Image (cartoon, rainbow, N blue to C red; front, side, top):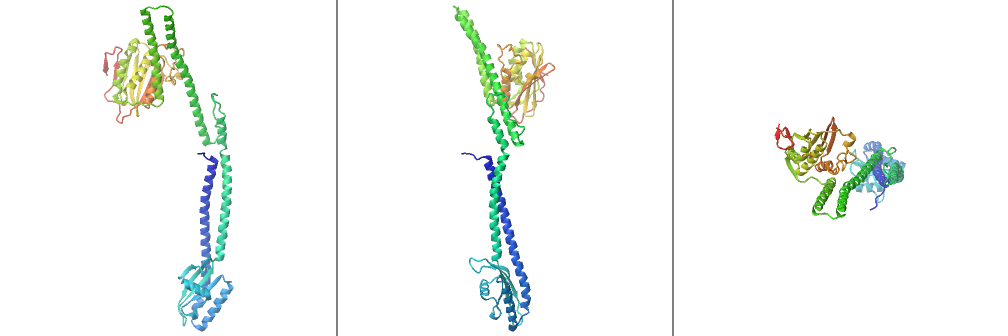
Amino acid sequence: MKQSSISGRLTLLFVVLMVVILLAIALFLRTTLFSSLKNQMHNELAFRNSLVVPFIEHEGTTQLWGRVVRKLTTLTENEGGKVQYLVLSDDPLYTFGGEMEKAVAAHNPPEGYSSVYLHANSCPYYLLVKTIPAHGERPPVKFVVSIDSTAYYKTYTEFTEALIFISLAGLILVAALSYAVSRYGLKPARQMSEQANQLAPGNVGQRLNTASLPDELRTLAQAFNGVLERQEKAWQQLDSFNADVAHELRTPLTNLIGQTQLALSRQRDIHELEDLLESNLEELARMTSIINDMLFLSHAEAGQRAIELTDISLQEEAVKTAEYVEPSLLEHELVVTIGGDVRACVDRRLFHRALANLLENGARHASTGSAIGVSLSREGDFAKIAVSNQGDPIEPGHLSRLFERFYRVDAARNGSNMHHGLGLAIVKAVALMHDGKTFAYSYQGVNTFGFTLRLNTPHAQPLAGRGKTTVTPLGTDTAAT
């Protein structure tokens, strides 16, 4: 279904709004005018009633009633038929009004103001009825002043027609001006669209110019520029990722091809072939590890959540993890100290994997014979796991990128034959799967890497009575102090 333009929608909204406003104003004006005309007729009736009623009240005989008839006849003639005077009575000697008097008497109007239609298609007559008590020979009579409302209704009709014409003309003018104003007001939006259409693919650093845009569109343009920046960063990461994957997989593949070609270059005995197969198996295992880690990272970044949640003591699990990485600790003569404890509902397996990667990373870069500290604490709804080691300081420019795939501070990739640079990226993925995040900082020769995990349990809290646990490199002395 084709969508209408914003200018068309705004014009329609303005017209509808104007119609509502004009209808309300028109109804108010028509009602006010009708009420004013009605009050004017009532005032005229009251004025004439006040002039004639005292005269009738003092005429109490048949001889004097002729004076009343002559006066009422004169007044009716002077009004030109616009105003008529009637006297209604049971005694025909004290009546006045002719055919008009009979027609009004047939309606039997009540005391006070009222109106009657004498003909089907005519305007009504407005009446003021006043009962005059008996006096002398004269019985009680009803004095009626009637006024023809044709002239007033004509004014009312002409006003209504003029109001309709002015309203229609106003609506047409409002529609035209609304469309013109909306087109002019949306000119920055069209300019922004033209800018967006001019963005060429592959041109790095292109952004929309937000300086000349109004506040509403500037926010949209800034958000669009943010999308471009994030997309550009994602493409850069993808390019870097492709290069890193090619580099990491090229080395074992080159080794496999070279060793196989060398083995096939001449006759080999069974022991040499066994050594070759063992070497190839190591390279294949390394490639399998890279592929499995990449699949794990892709699942985490695609939004996969940790589902096998268990309520555990992070200190107890950290001790098990430290014992698991004991070979790395022995190699560098390191001691692990574990401080604090938090109960949290997390994926036990993923917690071990992330902490083991941090401990392995700390062991590789810690000073020989130093200690690696593991700190477990709670910050709001999250458990914070921090691993610190003494070693060479890390420049601030590297800290924000340490958890990226294949990123190494050493650009020469020393030791890449042993470690393929996904350990800290896996830590970030584990944190992401628990709604957490990673952090890293370096201060005065102490480097700290860590991550947070959402507790996922309403009763999770730091455990009382738990202090620091020390794990020796031999894994034989575990004690709480």
